[in-house]
Length: 244
Image (cartoon, rainbow, N blue to C red; front, side, top):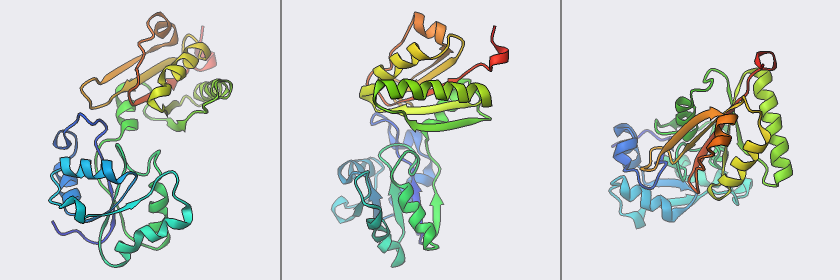
């Protein structure tokens, strides 16, 4: 496949159990297979994903620039060297859509700063899939990223999100590292009001996928822990005048 020189933003599977052909559109797979230069978070897992996508390889011959949370911003423009030379680059996240809750946004900004072409490629986004399946307000929503780790700060952040949700009638969406899911859910149950609705979508597109939405009062009766799985949390509070 011949690709016009651009920075292609490549979707990845959300679950290691998912076959790429089951969750990625055919044009996305064709784009992935047509690239030889990539910017990734982890070269080892990126090569594993590309092999699963039936990339013609060989894997050892692919260019893999690394952009992760430790990459200094001053080093990011150098990763665009192949594109300046007329070769397309694929930006690949560890899971889902690149540049969303992902360090790849720095590379996209650098490409725009140089007037280079940026092409988003269609594929799964855990945030949008969770919002679609939550039954909460999809007209007005806000992605808050990760909440603070210290319990006191996290509980204050939860109260602030709930207040914003009630005032703006806006769904609040946030994520957590899988091994801290239990602590986050415990704080949500201890902090949110009984009539606030909470949705938790875990392991989206995976074999153990689970999606649940209920009021806090119902969650407290049956917490249904997501376990150490990738999860999206969504909160929609009832406006003050609408509460009993």
